[in-house]
Image 1 (cartoon, rainbow, N blue to C red):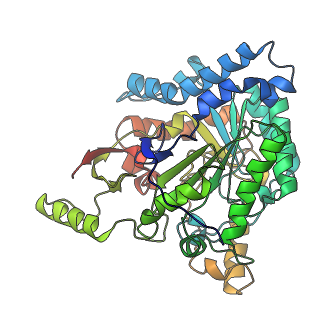
Image 2 (cartoon, rainbow, N blue to C red; image 1 turned 45 degrees about the vertical axis):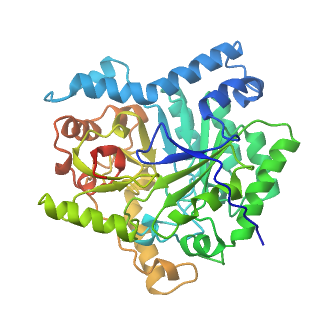
Length: 453
């Protein structure tokens, strides 16, 4: 049994990303950017490659990349806001993607009720090794500095994950990232991840108690166990310490819902001594219609909307400190100037919330031409009540919002191509709701918020 001693010895601090989310800051909390720079001599890129003459070169490249994360989209939005068309200006100005999210596994072993997987048929697949390496190499050639090795699935289910991370570091990717549920974080995998050169690992763990966690993160193929996942995460810290390794930097995050908001302190106590950063993020509706508002906040919101004669479906946000906001209007999304998402079969999406690239921008592989067939197989498995599909009973075939020509393109061609530039033009000219997938998006980053309490 895991014992938790609750002590309010922390403060909530805004994150650089994700409006409303908070870092649970304690004496143990480390800043990720500072941590990377301070421990540069222990970073794989410096220790095991000949790509940088000295540590100052690596630090400088990392700093430029991180500064661009916000500066690049902000500069473009300011410069081209309300212009008729962005045309080929990103080519002229040599604006490149900063990050590629490469889906090394679309399969996941959990069936979380707040995940798209419960409501959109998602293939249980692993990326082809050669295609993955080709994409990594191409990303590096095109100046991409960061690769996140997951999107819809659990990356630790790919047996080649650590080889791909190492390959990425060897060809010049300076920041490698994974999100994991830690169900498969064995001692061997922990050591392999540390040795691969992984820079940043984010744990997803939604609860501060056994009951809440196991309700929000049930297993698909076998029961998920609260105590075992805590053991895995704590053991990873032990192995990192024993090997005198500094990387990967570790963060754990909990999605805030009405059912777990009261467990922030116990969540912090479980992990504060075992990770570099503990955070809480906000719930985004993905089909489950879960309640993320306490009764008093729900009543306050309903009364405010009634008094102001606003629609009942006006977007709202309850931040990590319990402050309630409503949306005044939409705003241009930064992701379309920062990153690209690549599915296991080579379809390319514009943002992390367009699950499986429903608004498809193009293809890096011809396997993506038959995505619908794989999605239909999932629906058939659900209908046949196969093991592992019982909790996915509400899943439906994803809609298709954009169908580009079925031809294989390069990362550069898609980044600078017609399909993505059409999206950018509509965002820059306040026509976000004319794009179906963006109209239905509730990312907190794409709204202007006003506090109402």
